[in-house]
Length: 361
Image (tube, rainbow, N blue to C red; front, top):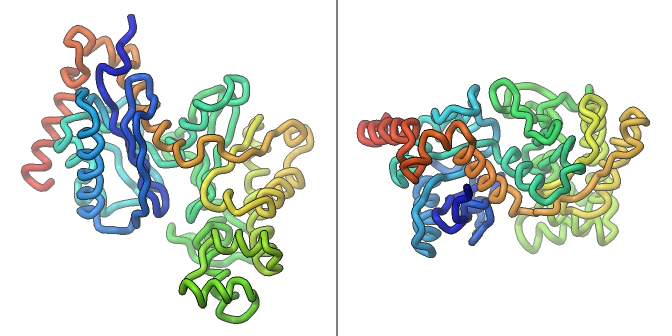
């Protein structure tokens, strides 16, 4: 038995760093359309809901097929002990979104179940779709943004961990000299010294103090210094920028070497803003991995750029939603009716979401 891919649609969104990606997919998980725009994840939950609602309405207006599900990648940790449950997960990194009942309101507004994962887990699922079965059996996908996170694939399956938040590698201790306080409350986390925010701040200080001519010129022209600016300056021969990216890359590579020693992946895929800064950072990451991983582990490991780019999160969100919809146990409870919206778990979820929307919690 096979469903027609065009019989229904999946809405997908991935919110990662300062970007929101949105798309519409068919029942094969193929993107029909995709759209990206800048968005501050620290914005009030109401602003995010309003923007998601507008973008989802715009997407659905492009197509007349019924909506069966929503796949959403959220920043940071998404805590859900039972991956098979339709219960709304806890957005641990975004407590304001939980307080505003963002997910329940989306479910009620669009009358469809929402499957949520951390953005990096959605991106990992997207990357898997572009790799051969052999290459993707044991893999790490690393998102190098303001946060540094990893998707862990073991025996071809995404490893989510006990609470569904595996891969928070940006909170691994970076070493004794690094004493910056992290947003998690700990001191010395990797992303406080090698994440994009930390790198941009270091570049801004160098520009203000006259330690980088090119970054100083960028600051004078634009009023800011970004990670992309630092990458450009490094490619143009700026010593400070090149050294900054190399130091960050070696720190990241050393942490990834520890993961490689534990998990023995065949491939490490690098994505995110920092991975786009050029060869200096990539070479330093490789140096850190090859210099600290056990030789038998590092001998055959492939360290590559993301093949999917920013589409990875949307493709992954579609993959997750389609996989959940057509999981045998789930499918058996709605196939006779012809729509997953008749599934008892979905109708119960919609009822809870309606009550939440009507009472405000």
